[in-house]
Image (tube, rainbow, N blue to C red; front, side, top):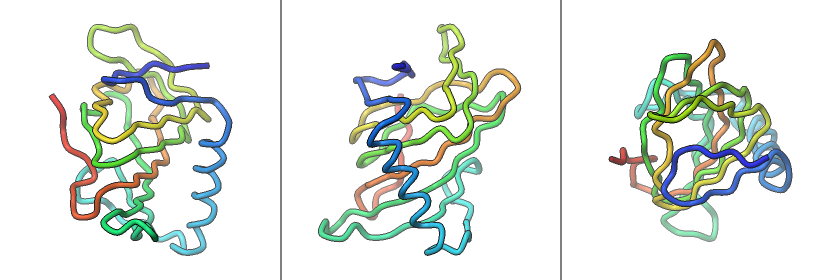
Length: 149
């Protein structure tokens, strides 16, 4: 099932397949390395950074793994990344973009946003928080994301 969240250009979304396996495999592989130690991020209260490392073979790039939780009533502001974002929906929720009908972002769905694709801009509605596991492959030294109009 294809999901359609607000963004400027199409992005990959699927219920299963290689992206889902990659994200789940990455999550399982970093758990021993980080010893389940998580640190709050400086950019937003909703995101907890699990691990950050240089991307081998790609000078100037880094990989950032995080868990993000948005509670009902909270907004995910429109933003973009200086690289690629892949996300796995750990706990689905109902979301709503301005002027649009509410839609379900299902548990188990995966999402990928390419460099500088503006996305987000919705509110969590209903009673269930939205929980995402994200992996960003981004330019080192740049903010993880920038707000977009």
